[in-house]
Image (cartoon, rainbow, N blue to C red; front, side):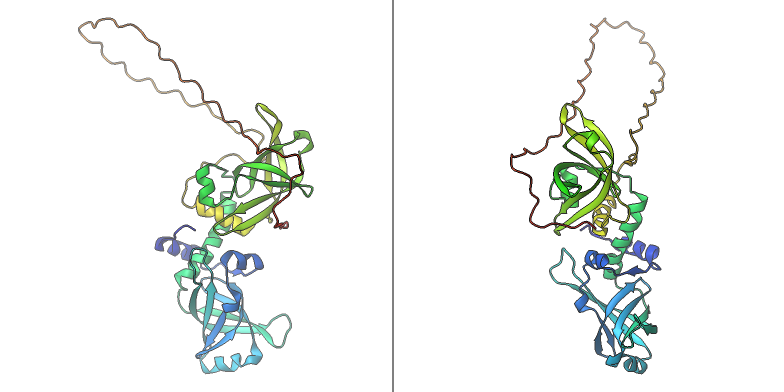
Length: 337
């Protein structure tokens, strides 16, 4: 996880302070919220609660009103503190902090007479830990739309920085796993190379498996094959452009790419839907003024012609050897999201 400076935290706060994030199952997993360690503190006593949503200005929590919480709030003039607890991947101990606020109101939750949804208005800026954790998610969500077409060629350095376990992975075509190699990835899709025939793979619904480490995460992202290309010199191979299905891209995947893109300038390339990448000829160099001729004649030198270096031959991708027995996936199967 990249380090966040105080300037970046301030930027997160100013940009996203009014945006409310609902704690769905996916957001809980991405932020690593420890739900069993979330409490309301009122007058020195603690009440367990569930965080429904939060922003940098307030939060909504679900709590039991039959436990004496409402009566306690009357004695403290609705003053309260929200205790939050998160697990950071690079820290052994959980990160715990309090956010001071006031209860601005509550209403029955889900038609229950025992459970209520409390609205909390923060009375001060929340701790930097909360701004950092939620800011990463919000920033990744914004950039996934703004920079969706920036494709990252999977070099060894990039693989190490984003924590991808290997370029070799699996693509599920009609539920059947096939070995493939990742060439590049982006927020919106990926390009892979696999053994196959292009005409039998066009316009197929697929799912691409991506395995990451530090921390260990696996995703199976739904997509569609929108373009096929031949691999020069390898008739048995085909290159596939896969465009991910909007709404099916995991937030954890977005955060990983955004962590890298936030500190690296990446050249924007055409969309996966484009059939060819546009190429513009470089402008001819402007003529420069000729140097003045010397007054004394120099001895003639033998003219030599410099040979242009040979053009570099692009590396031909190679797939791992295919054994005779059928390919089997790792033990843990990741369902489609």
